[in-house]
Every structure is written in C-alpha cells, then in structure tokens.
Image: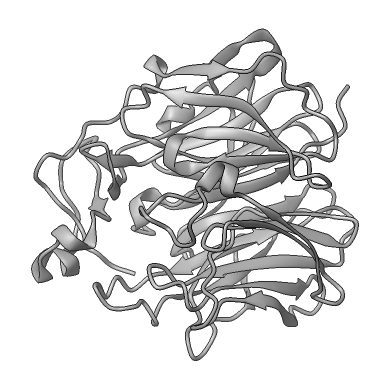
Length: 372
C-alpha cells in the first residue's frame, strides 16, 4: 500500500480527519498538513485512578477510547467499576489495556485528535506504552516505548514480556511486530516489512513461537462506504521471517481485518473485521489454528449494524467482545456461535445506538488473569 508522505521529521504522516471537513483532494491524499500536532510528550500525561478497585481474575478490562478511560466489568452481572482515566496525553488515544498477575496494567497510546476533536485523528506522530499500578497510584512509561510510531495491538506473553504491533502511520513502510521487555524496554523485532500492510493486532504463544498478525488493507475511498477494505491473517513460524497467507483476503471484501485473538488451549482464533463508517459489514470469525478454516460466529448487516472490539478475549470456549454500535457486551460460545449473554454497555457508551464520533467505542476487552 502506498500513500504520499509529509517529509517533516517527527511529524505525523497521515490524517483521518472528519469526512464532513474533507475535500475530494484531501480525501485521496489522506492527510492534512495544516495545524499538524508535534510528537506528543507523553511524559506529561496524568491519570485519575481508583485505588480501591480490585482486579479480580475473570473480570474484564474495557477501554473506552473516546475519553481514554478504563473500566472493570463483571461478565456475569454486568456491573462496572471505574479503574483509571488518562489526561494530558496531548490528544493521543488509549487503544489497548492488559492486566498482569502482579496488579499492573499496560496500555498502548497513540494518534492525536485533530484540534482535540474526535471526528478527526492523525497518526504517525508517535505514541508509547504506559505501565499503571492502580493500588499504588503509579503511572510511568515503558522505557524506550516512545521510540515507537503507532503502538496499538498489545498482548501479555507468558514470560511477562509484551507483544506489540506498530502500524507506523498506516504506511506499512516500517510497520512491525515487537516483543518488548517492559522493565528495560529491550525490544526484539519479530516481523517487519514484506507482506505487512497495516498490522493492527497480533497473537502469539511463546511455547510454539507461532505469530498470527491481523494485517489490514484499507483503501480510503471516502466518502463512500469502504466496501473495498479487507485484509488477511499472516502466520509466522518464528524464527522464519517469511509469513504464510494463513487466512487470505476475503472476496468480495467484507471489511478491514482489525484483530486476531486467542488463548492458550483454545483450538480456534477469533478474527475481527469492521466496515466503518457504515458498519453494515464486520464479523467475529473463528479461525482453526491448524487448518486456517473459518466460520463466521456473528456479523453486521444492513438491518443490524455492528462494530466489534478489535481486541476481544477468549476463555473456556467463549469469546468476549464489545459491540459499540448496539452498545452491548457479547459472550459467544465459539463451537456453536450462540450468544450466551448480552450485557448493556450504555453505562459507558450511552443509551443510543450508533457511533457518534470516530472513536466513541470500546476498542479493547481483555480478561484479567489470576492475581498473585
């Protein structure tokens, strides 16, 4: 995928500013050189935290992206508990949040609201990874994480390291998947270049060193419904740097591939697709780890539009995913595709249906592991 760049050091490369403000020329170019923010100084970020929150095993962390807030949700009762809210990120968005057994929460932050307006967002200016300890009211940056361009996808590996995707301003030029040691910032490049287009999410278990990457392909044919948006799942059998096209691009296109999710012992992965801004395509798709065969569990339609959280999570044969259009948390049995529970998200996202702003969504649902 090729797109024109802004040749300014430390400046963002592309903008996804609101469609109502775009001209045909800038829709094609995909960026706005006027008023572009500088690289954010995330060291100045602050948070308000609920020190009394209990990160109980089996509960869910939900990232409300529009206001940079994380909640804890009981998937049995639907009760919410506020965890923390980030401030002074200079417009940067909170994308993913994962808890550790030690009571820490790591989260990725990148992008910038255009003039602090959620309708328009610029990527490519820089981001970072925060370490937050609610009980101690601590917040800090993972060393060297602000060297990344657009850290988005985030997983906790079984050795305590982080699996991070960096989509590099939607260019695909230097997009990469990294394993990062969070205390030192030491970084290992697992995949970069080649067939990577826009890697939004990834999943890996260190025991078998098989890396799966959600590789989005976006056409940006605004203001039309992006029916040409698609993507594939790449599989890397590390240390071999050459990927396999594990799940090929869908034809006809059925939305951008924004997520690939799994859990130890689960035979299937869950691929997430989305067709914003019309939301009439997009699905949760089970992918057999051995064969790559796919089964659609649930999907959007003209009659019932949906936007599933790109980072969803799996446990005991079920997938937990937020639908930000219908404002519900879904618990789906993977073997049958049956919705076992549907819990309202109106306490976070409002009573209405639909997405009123570009990032007015729950981007991430992650299961809290057992605590030490």
